[in-house]
Image (cartoon, rainbow, N blue to C red; front, top):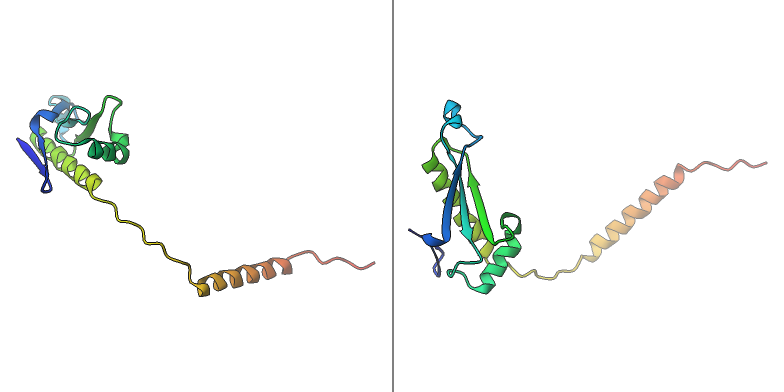
Length: 141
């Protein structure tokens, strides 16, 4: 099995491992008997499908999902069957990698319009006048 992400990136099934456990999700009495929760484990450090630059990008963008050993984890417990959760975890894995490896757009520097600056200052002055009107009046002796 191979996972194709875009034109140039193909991940081999050897880099992906599935772990199963009892799910807290839907399933009724089935929950107590069958391991329907699926965790997809992708060896980010050990894979040859990604170059060092892409690995660095994934570590930065998906850091909360990656263990100290370099294992990316994606869990699914949405469905009642193990096979459906396995497919869901694979879909989510593809989405995560595709989104993380998408090139970021460069920000175009813009200036604040003069009218916006003037409006902000006018509002600040008006607010100051309102607050000044609330001050205690000094009594003359």
